[in-house]
Length: 318
Ligand SMILES: Cc1cc2nc3c(=O)[nH]c(=O)nc-3n(C[C@H](O)[C@H](O)[C@H](O)COP(=O)(O)OP(=O)(O)OC[C@H]3O[C@@H](n4cnc5c(N)ncnc54)[C@H](O)[C@@H]3O)c2cc1C
Image 1 (cartoon, rainbow, N blue to C red):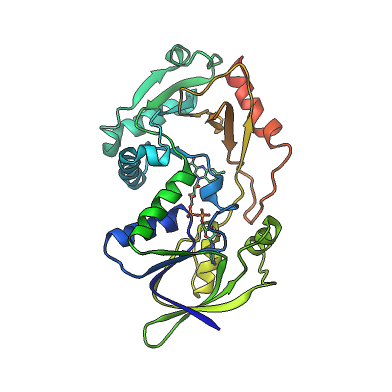
Image 2 (cartoon, rainbow, N blue to C red):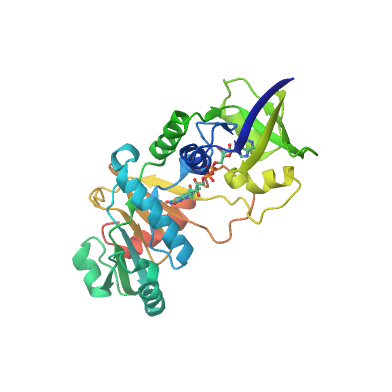
């Protein structure tokens, strides 16, 4: 059986695993290996996300971590397609007082240059947002924005590789043994390079191992960067993790009357968020009753039920 070795093994090489590999390398780690079933990440959150970047959080830790990230993205903005065009967040009348007071009181947002707009200022700022009777106000945070997550992932990987990190494809770790001598042995499956999307989906949603060769990885440390599979991988280590996989959907559509290209992210009071996607619009919404589980199917009624009605209620242009 083939045996691979490394001081540190990162399981999952999405944005988080790739960033961890880069930072370990920058901090002097010599033998770092990141393994993933699909380095391209066709079904990973890191490829399927909306690319929004914001430091405007109520939670102080989120605000601080995101601010450090934003400063980094700004320093490499061309490489990662980061456009600091702001987040425009609309709040319903009943939410506005509490939401704005909480943001104003957050000491970590003091220098975030957040603007607080009344409902009447909203249409003056963005003339296509012309149905505002239900709104109490909005915030505009100019340091936030949008980036290209695929470019960012490849940026992290290139810097990690330059420090010696290896990224191995088509490997799925399914068992972890902590040895008496302190080393860790991982049992994994390895598939040939060529796999179609149906095969990938089967492995990611069920415990499919057809066509795989068993391999072992001997390592000193493991980092669980398996994203929506974090709980599944934690179980392989004999432990648990409080996160669950939950489907999130986005729609990309054309709307000739609205040109969002000069702007960043908009978040409506309904929870629908939207931003320019080339000449189109990308919009998403986290359906609150979405059951936990792996589900990669797009619901044909999502756009008509969840996206279009709130946008229609916000603008005569939609
Ligand atoms: C629709 C949507 C919109 C989003 N929008 C935003 C946004 O606007 N802004 C924002 O900041 N965040 C957004 N997010 C969240 C963000 O995308 C994720 O938090 C982030 O990508 C997570 O990265 P990750 O590396 O942890 O996970 P992933 O990118 O999912 O990577 C995990 C990797 O681990 C691999 N893996 C799992 N288990 C194993 C195993 N046992 N062996 C080998 N490999 C394994 C998988 O193949 C996968 O490639 C969004 C997410 C979604 C789904």
